[in-house]
Length: 158
Length: 291
Image (cartoon, rainbow over all chains, first blue to last red):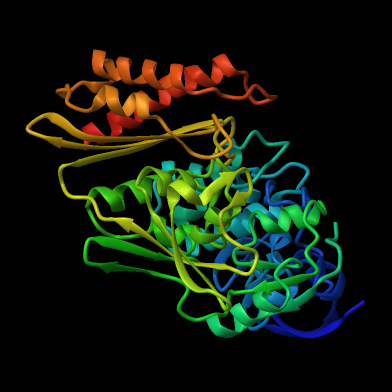
């Protein structure tokens, strides 16, 4: 097995790990960095549960090898809340508007919504539906996820 | 899930990339956006022993205008194409097609050239390349640069005319004047899926009459299918303002539907796909005229 040393920056913290090149970024985040907030669903890019931000952009962490993320600034659901007391506006909105039931898909939806709204909170309902269609949720029927994302957008526009 | 083991190399120049491909063409695979390759590796449908990651090679991403051509670098992300500026018919067509490519987190990583080299017959960029007779520029260390016309590039599903030691470097498309009406329409069960049937069209219209027509259909053959019958039906005809309900659109849709020989599979049988060809062709023509 060819293991390579790798330095990752996740949520502003440095992680020095040794991994095989074939290990996906999602697996390394969970198993080597101990950040299990990123969930794995389908592992082939369809469900979006593993969505994280790489240099500010939403990506599928199951479709990237960790070695490719060297030098990138990564952000996972653990890095959303500014501190132990306060939640990110997107997290607050999902809580308030019941944007989750079982919660498995939630980290992916939070990162997708946070990434796109931080880039531009001024998005039409149509754009938001298109963006949220990237991820799958088997519980909510999506309406509350959309409501929550719209509410977060409104707060972030202020 | 874990792909089988591979050696990972990350060249920092085009020359280094071509050297690596030259050393071991059969066992190497180029990794760009990875949005098709990595799922195939996760399922072990693809097991390359060496992965050449071109994400840090300078000069492979971005678009530039060269006279009457638009040149798109192979590693240009789908999202960059979607965010392209320009009010000309080509820019509008590219933006409209890009919006159908996967989902946002796929478009941030997936690349224009990667999609073409992957050669899925329902892929948006394969259809556009074939519609506009794009020129693929490929390069190898052994034979240097050569150009492959889109008509000769797509050989079959997942198979192109590129040799294993060649890299798709860039793609050149003709810029389209204001007399062009372009459209792109596709049907998929879920947003972001590959289309069951997709149709893209380009008409040149002078004084209300179609002087030149191109129609390309995806999902009905192993490669993007140019419908000569639909094109011949459209050329020389006067274009109605309300094209969607016009006899001309109906005639073109019928011509295409009779010409194609679509497969039957779990996603839809042949008669269903023919119906989709009719509907998507009409919708693509209407998009062009509505502009």
